[in-house]
Every structure is written in C-alpha cells, then in structure tokens.
Length: 230
Image (cartoon, rainbow, N blue to C red; front, top):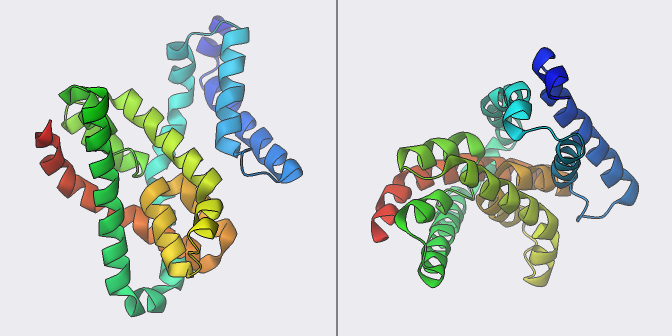
C-alpha cells in the first residue's frame, strides 16, 4: 500500500477529502454535535492508516497539498463579514473588547495550565496559539521554537470541542446576542468553530469570521509577551 501512495501523488488528499465527505453525510444523518465532520474524518484516516499499515510520513507526502488551501480558505471568510459591515461599525467597541478578552483569557489559561502541569518553555509556547487559525498559529509556534505538529493537533482539538459545545455554552450562560455569540465562538474555536457559527446564523458567522482575523493579530502581539512568562 505504501508503494501505491508513493506512486499516486494525491492519494492522501483523496483519502482525506473522502473521509471528510463521509463525516458530513454522517453529521447530516445523525444531526448530533458530537459527530463533527472533521473529527470523523480524522478517525477514519487514522483507522485507514492503521489497517493498511501506512506510515504517516508517506501519507502526508500526498496529503500535504490540502494545507495549501488554508490561507485562501481563511481569506474567503471575509465574504460574510463584508455583508455585515454596517453591523461591524455599529458594534465596533464591543467587538474589540470581546476579542481582546477572548485572546487574553485563552493565553492566561494556557499559562496557568503550564504552571500546574510543569511544562517547559518549548511545550508552553507550543500551546499558546491553540485558539487561532492554523495558517497563523503555525508561524507563531515555529517562530517561538514550539513543536508545530503538536500546535496543529491542539488547534484541531480546540476547534472541534468548541464546535461541539458552542451552542450548549451559549445556552447555559444565556448568551443570545448574535454578535456576542459570533465573537465568542470565533475567538475561542477559530475556523472550525466558525462553521458552526454559520450554521447558527449569518450574523454569528460574520462576527466569528471577524474574530478569527482579529484574534490572530492579537495573538501575534501578545504571544511574544506571554512567551517570556515561562
């Protein structure tokens, strides 16, 4: 099987996309938040690699091309944001305050957990950008000498969990304002959470898209400060 993948340039990409499509169909059929398409696709790909004894590096050589779409996909999130431009101007102060609060809360939590679990500097900075989009987080982690692959894993886990519990958390804390819901999801669960925000409503999706960009910029600034704490 390793030879097949090596010979077929896009084999890994095909497996990844097919797994994700299966995840979407399962989510549509079962309609439960726990059946997140990304989570399902990860499990299916892991099972496939294990059953056919395919080494990750071999798979990644033919699947890495999907990552090239991360940046343009993130930029495309500007479309719903543009549609809600007037709403953005109207609530700009609340949006700025909400985004800053989300970023500082995330990084402070990582700092406290690093102290509790005794993480060293490299491990600590690896998790600092866990709540922003992968396209930005990978650069931050690499710049701070973190472990990029673990950063990516933590980003995926954060996004999936955020997507699964977003509606429940908003319901428990009675967060009903669409702007607040969108900013909260986007600043905590980046692009994966934004897909959930878009399911909730157009305004929520637009505000979540905005939070991805602003949270990323704020994290770039604050990460260099927090990195000196450990």
